[in-house]
Amino acid sequence: MFPKRCYTQYMTLPIRQALLICFLLQIGGVFFSSPSFAQLQMQVPVTTSEIGLGVGGANYKGELAPNYRFLNNQPAFTVFYRRDISRPITLRGGLMFSHRIVDDNTFSDAAYDLPLPNYRQAELRLSLAELSAVAEYNFLDYYDMRQRPRLSPYFFAGVAALVYNKKLNTDNPGLEEALDEPFDTDLTMAIPFGVGLKYALSKHWNLGLEFGARKLFTDDLDFLSEGDDKRVANPYDKDWYFYNGVSISYTFYRVNCPPKYRTTPGILD
Image (cartoon, rainbow, N blue to C red; front, side, top):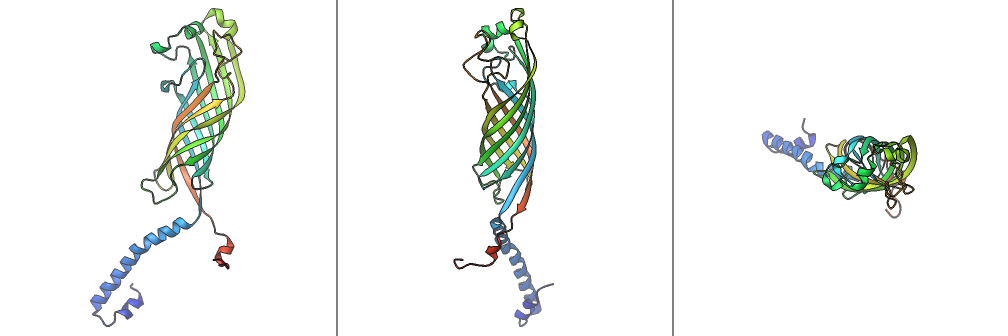
């Protein structure tokens, strides 16, 4: 039903013309008021939080794997919670789990057919459980709903606690006494850092890609450390591990009520 004011305003016009003008006014009001409404929504402070999970690969770098190699990734799983504290910065807490088997024959190409691995002939079984807290810096305003497409690359860094279970054995009979070690569980700290990309599938669903490194403060992730014979261990560097994967997350939005004093203009308003 058309507004009464339309009939009054155009009562001197033929009825068909008056109805047509009122109809056009209604349609125009809908379209031209939409941007203003969207801008009003953008001015309302909103806090977001996300829960998500990811799957990818964990990679170890140490005595048995002296260089990072993508083909050495073993399955890894993550769960995380993310919350924004400002437009560019979000905080994230997460858990990551992985189990892997790596040995001196892991690198199959000729570049890694070296005397030390051939002499050592060791195999490592390693399970990881990581609890991390990182800050992410988003290079674009990811929560600006006007972006098409809505995405942002980001950099992250933080701290992590790592619980790892390991077992080492060798096929060299002359090194069994020195290298054969039973399962042992240890705790250490790490510094995670890396880069990623967030992409909005919809208002609530997000897709993520991430690559990150973890610098450890120990060289004992693989039982081979600076205290061992230099013929079986490199005493000059620490162990590392990496995670790269894809994630899916769901965003919750909370509209923050403005302070009460804003409802009553002050002297300076």
